[in-house]
Length: 105
Image 1 (cartoon, rainbow, N blue to C red):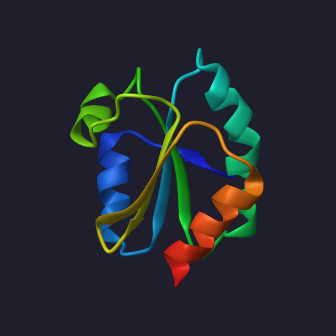
Image 2 (image 1 turned 180 degrees about the vertical axis):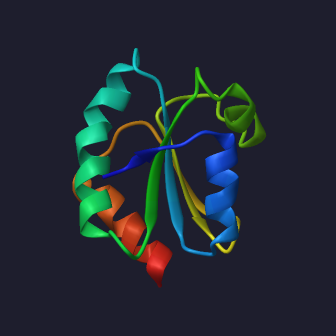
């Protein structure tokens, strides 16, 4: 399952050098609720290969600001500390799965 993280926990994950998918969201966001089950499914499917985490932008405004998050949901795909892909808005499982797979190649 995707783990909820704060800024300190996210920084610790960055140091691990495992690819990361971070979903910036908020509980009041309709599209965030649509994409949440897809993120959960993919977090199980890619367990052990990709750290899949969620960041509530209301609780972690500094982290959201650091990554210039202006719209939610925004999903960042990070490898070797660099953002390799950015997806804004909801998406189908197929679209997001392709981005997860690309992160591993």
